[in-house]
Length: 166
Image 1 (cartoon, rainbow, N blue to C red):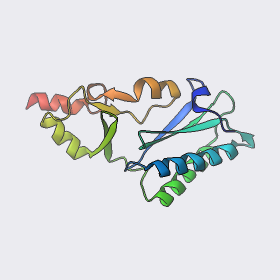
Image 2: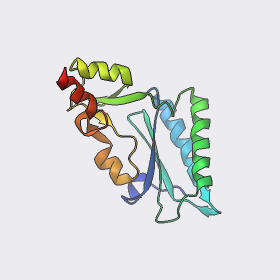
Image 3: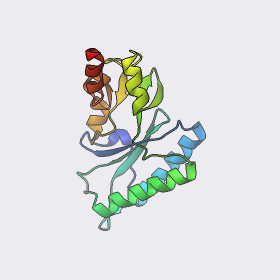
Image 4: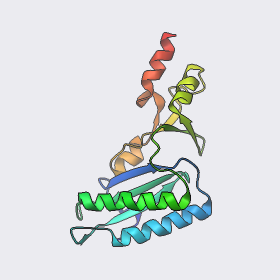
């Protein structure tokens, strides 16, 4: 059952899928439409799941479900992953490449390999105040409060400490 993203409760479960490239406006429309179609039939053990989708920065696909309405099952989560893989094949992109780290530069997103990120930290081009994305947030409140965070508050902070030791 499709629901407006903003109407979902703060504890709604989310999955953040980071694309390896920025989407065009046309792709965002297509992704949103296809995701809404998927969500309108998304179910767990025959019970409709109340969910939503949002594309942020033309780079991140956020899939959400209100677990207070009905809990997703392993099979329903698997079906969402299958849907994401179908999207990715149709778009020619990758939602599952965990080797890239996303950083915000204004309203733009820049992807760096881990080795590039470490090098830029060493050079001072990425600092503790640079915004990165914590794609492991698990609920809507986490998306709002802990998704965009300074590097110093992320797992990348250990590389800042290495820079200070140089």
